[in-house]
Length: 436
Image 1 (tube, rainbow, N blue to C red):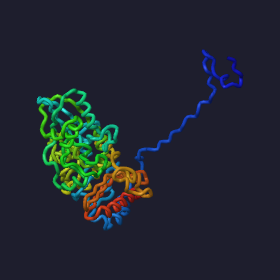
Image 2: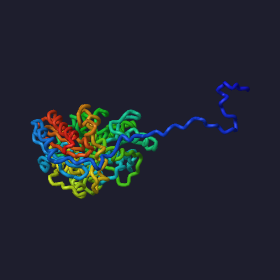
Image 3: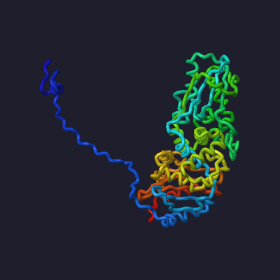
Image 4: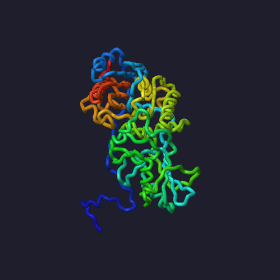
């Protein structure tokens, strides 16, 4: 084949001849870092100036009775406070303490299992709850409410592939004990979609509508999970009963939850009550406390006290903050968050807590707060807390000078619809402060 000089083929190298590179190498691309650490040299706000910036905003009637504390994250210096030691109803800011206790006690990659085991009785299987409230009844590849949740269909498939002939299903909920609802909870919250009876196995957080955040919940979540297993195996749901698995029973099927890191982040970002209670029970069991509401409260308190935090004023009755009987001083919330944001002995363990918090105007329970023009949008990361007559906000903010400030604000006696914008205004003021 003859190739003319003008043909595109003329530029191709002959077989066996090394190609000649004539193109000029591109210039190196300069990469500009968009995320940088807060500079250690950023000026520390003056307490008097912070007090002046917050004074009028902290006195508005919408906040009712307010307590709070603002600290400099790096030094731990208190920049402003108002009744910081007063025990207040924390609402969901209690989850900050639960997450901190988990980080101090458990491994970030820890998972919880759900198993199906065989008994000596022919055809009988036991669904053993290991503490995972995220197990999903959604078939693959349908989405699940909880991220990276295991599926009941996986258990069904494993049982079928085992060749075991099944005639009945027993549900074992014995890993957790005690009352199914905490002191200060209301049974109406089950139908209202806030929580469910706390049992160590359930589907999609006991939601009757699996993908809906505030779906009504089941009053019998563990039995419902057993019935789903039975239905998947072609059994009548009437063949499901409550019981316990024998010691050393052979495992026929098993799935595991997402890691603690994934579950705790979702718990804080979305303020999921049942995930908080499940994580609290993991803390209790890891510290040899009973997996009960009382055991969880004692374990969280013990983990914080053991790390050197002053837990005076802390009175917990659950891990989620749904109880109206919980009490937490703003000082404790601020101290724990300061330990996570600072350079102290527990910073490495607690640091993930900061990235798990909702971002103002962007994620989780702060997605619909702080408009795009609000000073704190994108700069405030904080856990919200809301109950009737109670509103709280605890987290961090980067001020205009590049200094990280920690705040804990707890309001009582006014409607959340009024208190939330007032709390957000305080955080906005801290963002725009640079108070010197």
